[in-house]
Length: 377
Image 1 (cartoon, rainbow, N blue to C red):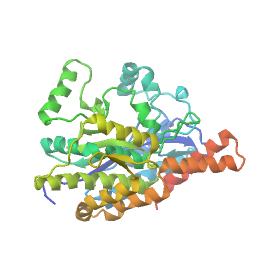
Image 2: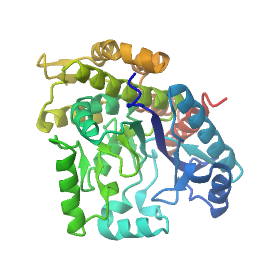
Image 3: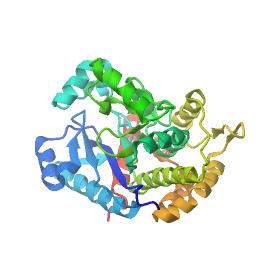
Image 4: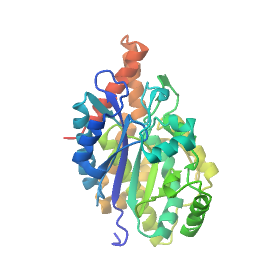
């Protein structure tokens, strides 16, 4: 691996806090945030809503380091929350909560966001996972972003964890994406000619006082506003640590694969966002239960078939990054079902056992609490 391209990892996750007994959303007590801050310093912060909490790992050289950091952060948040009768869950949406009952965090950035986005901001009862990959060269960051966009729907399909919204099955695998789509400057990134074009576009909005900096560019994939990284933002929050690490490993290895091909003067074919958005919709609607479009073969391919081709493409890179076990877990997600499928199975089983509608939704929340704790020891 070229020493100039670290392909280092950083993972940010957003969690929801729930009452450990009832599963209802709960605002984070100031004492809880203080305890987390004392333990984790700047690796934890409040999120937009008081019922949310965000963590960010230190820079990790590889997926093994990322696992250690993420497990420690999850364990710490869960342990501190338990002291207050609360539990964290990591999912795109809470199955039953009403966004109208939530209160946003009293912080300048969030107060401004609430004013700017009006009713759309109040609906942001959603959680995602963001994966940073270290790519210092600005021009390379844009070039890889243009090519990596093709794979974003595949990542969304695997990570989808938000089928329920306000107590109803939305019919979507990732309802989170439809909620976040109400914000401006979201969705697939545009195909750019280079860093200079990106800088001009962002600068135009800054000059007009529409945004203060590029942190308010909320594309599914973007150059980070704070770090020399490419930040993948399309994934729903993953309930299980192992699945979060698989998403991170797939992103890291795919970016390295695209870089490796470029060194041989080979580029991944770029398709217009009109076509890629169709796959993004299919991923949000169906998750992994229906295929995605293979534009080269002009066919809809089953996810299992596309997955094997993807793993073959990045095999050399996963070897170089020492992430083969994590990337190979892609097969496990397809075999076991993504979180959306697992949540629906829990919900259906509860109803079949005689549970009421509210009890079945509570069973889903309890399931998410259990999954958060998996693999942390």
